[in-house]
Length: 161
Image 1: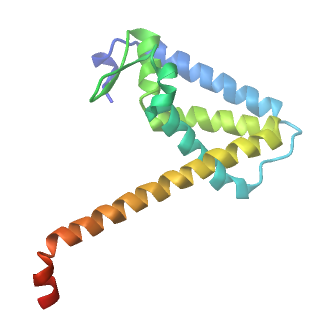
Image 2: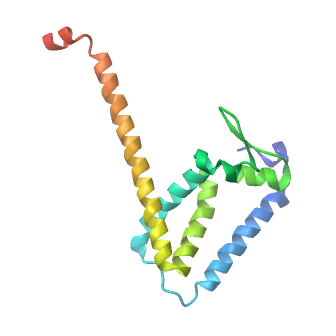
Image 3: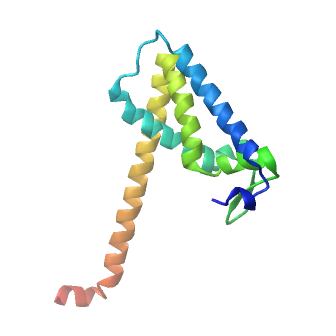
C-alpha cells in the first residue's frame, strides 16, 4: 500500500472512513444492548461468511458495478480512481482485509438485529467460503497430479521402474 504522500489523498479522507466505521460500529453496539448475544460457536461461520463477502465484493465480476465508481479495472490490475475520498474508498474496495472489516460489521449487525435473517445470510456466505476452499484444494491437487504425471516419463519407462 502506498503512503499518503504518494496518493491523491489526505489524512482527513481516511479519517472520514474511520469515523464512518466507528459511528456504524458504535451504533451497532448501542442498539445491540439488551439483545441476545451471538454465541461463540457462530464466530467461525461469521468469519467464513466475512471472507466470502469480502472476496465477492473485491474480486468478483458480478460486483464490478459496486467498485466501478471507485476502482479502475484493467486487464491486469485494479487501481483506485480519482482523488481524495473517492480514491480512499477505491483503496478500501481493492483490499479484502479492509472490506472484510466492513463486511464483518454488517454481518454482525444483521445477526444481532435480525437473527434469523443474519443466520441465513451467514450460512449462505459460509457455505460459499467452504466451496471456495474446496475448489482451491481440488485445483491444487489436480495441478500436483498433472505435474507428477508429466515428470514420470513415458508410460513404458514408468512400467519398467
